[in-house]
Image (cartoon, rainbow, N blue to C red):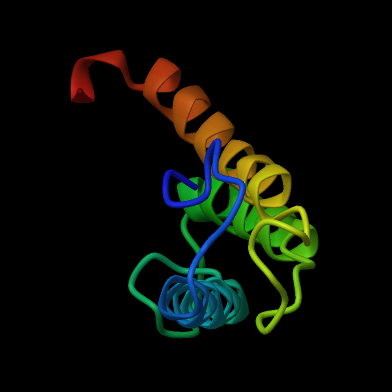
Length: 103
């Protein structure tokens, strides 16, 4: 998000780099969503994975609707990535509140 915040233009190399990063992010989040576990392998989810990890990934993947080869500024990347970050950080905040001594 920082790479596109408050920018009006990007050069071709920056656009390509950002598109590659978005493609990797989408792949990583989708892969993690498929397993639903922190360890990245299908299997029984523990309580924290069921309550925090899997729902956060479900929401993040559902909101990550940007096409990877679109223009980072013209295609609303910032607002979409911001919403995805909220999908992930909000459950993390809740988890930290549930286990305050674990910080």
